[in-house]
Length: 287
Ligand code: AMP
Ligand code: ZN
Ligand code: FE
Ligand code: FE
Image 1 (cartoon, rainbow, N blue to C red):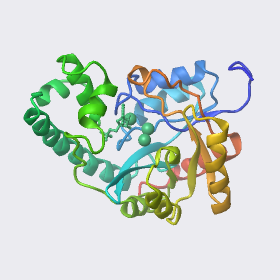
Image 2 (cartoon, rainbow, N blue to C red):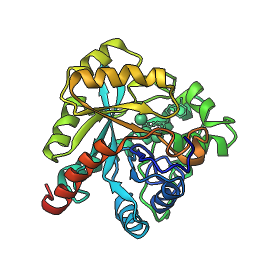
Image 3 (cartoon, rainbow, N blue to C red):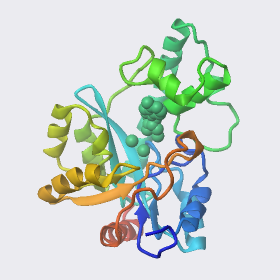
């Protein structure tokens, strides 16, 4: 099938410039329409700040937009990403959790900058987070990598992660950790759904085994540009658990140019199921 065929696709994983994507929330909504997507969720890292703007633009364009966020957790000293969907965008619980993550990220930035300075790569907070920028931003390692490129320390984001910022590299700092269990509690309290993000990327067998025994509702079986063969494993595992299967591209804009919006997606049945809960939560609950 080609992009112009009118079959249902909802991309349930992408990042705006409220975290480490390069497009604004409205630009992503417009791009989703151009790509012929019928549904979308913007899943920034640890923030839902994209939603006021994204919801307004989605209403204008007639795109069905589902609330979503990609929450950072740590399990067995390994970073684990958890997608949450269908919470109210006014949810006090989700907002408070994101505020805690915002503080964690600010503190972690300072710790990473200290490590970089000791490695002979001095950078100021201002170079990573320019003051006076209008938009809220959930600051992450990709922003540090961009500042390193700007100063000529490395040639690419990839090099920055490979040599300094990636897990286990000399300037990696996890920061204060939130466990998977407490993250699942927050998601449950907000009457939202919890999904294991990109299981394809989980290398540690024990971590995977533990996650599969926890109270998730779904698994991201279709991810980015992985092949149908690689998807099959996760779809099978998800079905066996009785979980729903989601899909998304993990689009980040030009910071990760190889991944296009809509390169993986969820189908209509699951999307409508999630949207129904979202609409209920949006109407009833500020919990
Ligand atoms: P953070 O949320 O600050 O821990 O940064 C994690 C984000 O950095 C991921 O979601 C990716 O967008 C990006 N990232 C992680 N590993 C790499 C890598 N090896 N190369 C480029 N980007 C990466
Ligand atoms: Zn990211
Ligand atoms: Fe992720
Ligand atoms: Fe992501």
